Length: 565
Image (cartoon, rainbow, N blue to C red; front, top):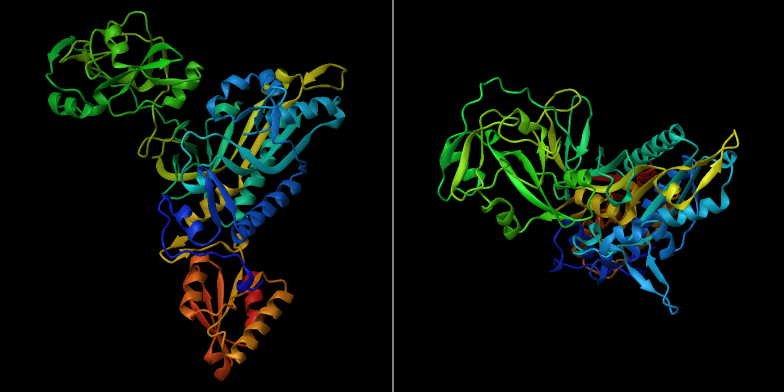
């Protein structure tokens, strides 16, 4: 390919709407363009990257035994009503009606339609297991599309679904996909961690997210260097400290004027935050509940919502809190609550002689103890785990990092097969529900995550396997006939050798070509200039390191082939 024939509208200015580096650089490098909020066109270079990622995914899915198919984007509401997700999925589901006023949706995921297909075609244990996948656009009406390809309303995803006879078969399929995902992201040249995660609206039991580590990541993960435990903070656990042995002191009402926050209370009572009790009230599908954690903790609302099984969880209004407690936020506590479920975090039970709101404005209680002064509907893990906590497996100190989720795998079990009646007849002639798993990779997210992890002040630094082109050949002056002849010769020889190469034959200044090469992120740049003509050498630049080599013109093709192959 010659750059003069490429659709390559690079930009010098940073686009105003771009917030994260991948969005800025993919737009500036002429790889994507915004069509509407959360909806993007992929230009030729961007699409080449997407195709290379998809090819790696396809090879690893096929190697694991996957069979590729293509499912419809437009899905009938009847299937979603059967599974129970038509109303559960919420406002993110793009819904539409046809001319006959029948309800449909644009597929955000394909559990329903793949289960419907399999229930029609599979009837015997002899037809299982199956691994079926597709690479296709998905649609989710995000409330706030942002960060370019990170959170869009239309995006490309690989989704694979496993169908097994039993839980043991599911575990084998899950491990196959786990290993395949490790291969995919390793081949894409990414630094990543598989972490335990929350299953969200997809459902199921065990699930792992694959996180590309980057400071700009939306998600926080905690991990242990000693035993390889790693989890998204939405799901992470920590080892509990031993309960204090101090004797209980008498409950004491304390006047605390204008002490509304944990920070203010720490200063006022001269006690550490872990000796305080933080009490929050939530509206769970219209029902008010109470959650209590230590003062140095935050409530993990994902854990709490999963515990309650509610569709919507939000902080209760001040009016609702005042009606229930007779007080205002800042002075509420778990003592004396009537007619409300109280969920107490496990760590709270170990706090001896703590401090909590007294449900009276400008007052707190001293020497509050669980069991004596208040009780719980349930003692549960509803806290956010953080760096410095102890690993739940080995007790070592946990570290934290930011990550970008690029893939997730789920053990669904029989959630969808039972709901949709996808059964098979086993060896004994008994009808059994098919045991399922699902496995997704965001193709565009993987591209964006690669940029977030691999860039500098000049532009993108693509990992070799997914770069739009592996090598760019740059003649310093397109007006110099000999330079152009030599550049074309190197270009043609690399092309014939199977190297993915592009020739920048534009009538532009060398500085412009060099800047574009760095911005776009070609892994290797071969410069053909005056030295090439006079000394028969070329300059080879490694984009990742900035290293430049002077190489004989006669050897450059062989040298580059060794680098890329």
